[in-house]
Image (cartoon, rainbow, N blue to C red; front, side):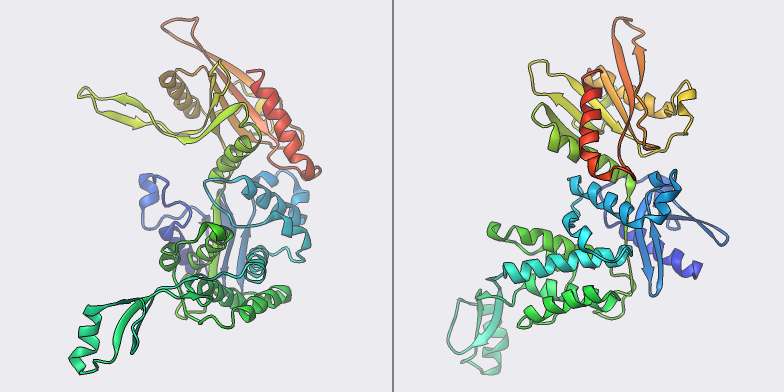
Length: 431
């Protein structure tokens, strides 16, 4: 690959920060030559914590989660790794990934880009064929019989000043099939059609374009889509528009309106891991616990002038719904601890991580902290526990639990939900 071209593309991707615009950056990450996706060492490339793909014409780099590297058989099972990725996406709440995992078993390709195109193309086809979308479309036109409201400013400028008194400038909203939503779907379908090499994808996208034959072929942008208001009756189209934004945000270095030869999808796994666990807890434990995601309503300290500083932001904060009102701070760590971490007195836990959580617990008046790591093997290691005693009163203690969760399984993927529920439930009840 052309390293210079690839690095330039990655810098442009990071500059747009499609999925991480609301994440606070460190000073090093603001450097104009910084990008977090790949590290270069001569002709060698090392992946960081992002997964996805980068495609530049015929050149393609696919990046898979590092949690699989401990099992060499995973390298020969791309299909299973992709199933895991879309399984995690299914529980994500803050990051909306418009993909339907149910479609994965019917797809005959394991190329990451072609898989994404197939999922989006099927979404488009299901929507336009099963629930055609019509909406009131704002139009501005000059006509002899007034319709809607007369735009006098435009009428004076465009008609009266030229002596065309009969051409009345009107603004009106007819109920049309040729609307901004369908134009966006058609435009994105053409982008994907020009990109895909997979016959099944080409067929599906051609069907979408055929159904939308009466819709004008007009380019659109993410900003155009963000201005579209969808009636609640068509709420499924919100997900469709998310897919359109996903495509348009990745349209890099394009000189042609219908060119998608350089595009990418790159997801930071630290946030996927965190978002996945929050969504899982919300789905399966919300009867007993109130799940706060990215709770940041308190500050760690205040200045002598009384100004709050050092805003605290917990990955996940649990509050029991029963009379106990028990509180648990949950911190996710997308790190692979050593296979021999049990021999380490610190159990592979970073000292800085522990300092941070203890200070948060002290401020919150919370006695329970849970550090959550992805599993490093099929066998889930039992949790490790630490006790931090207060220097003011030794009877006041903070309990720290470091645990693995079954985030992946190459042998028992279909049972991940069950195993994860059991382990979380078991751990919470024994803290």
